[in-house]
Length: 131
Image: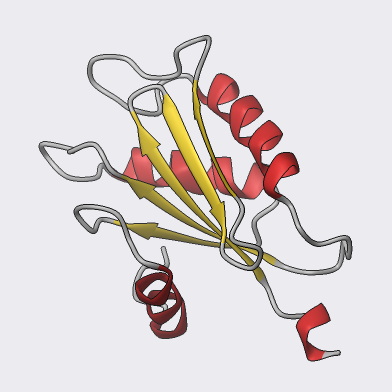
């Protein structure tokens, strides 16, 4: 019964014009390259609506829960290097993207390389990636 209210966690990796998503509950994952680019030379998330539509369609495919009351936590992780670090406007764009695709809790990881499920869950428990 408790599992019905436990948040569903999606780990979302961003690269230039590419999104990879993993549902940590079911283990389902999906990787897509955008047919219409959402990145430019300066920013990975340059075209917000294009990225939102792509991410939304991917979430539908990896979704494992039927209960609309379950909270969704998204860990947003930009894998391609950001030379000067995160600008506040970029953090806000990723947060808005997650919220508009169903997230209640949004975490942003600046970790280099891919994250294991255990590192993600530890980061969520500590809430050290929240913004």
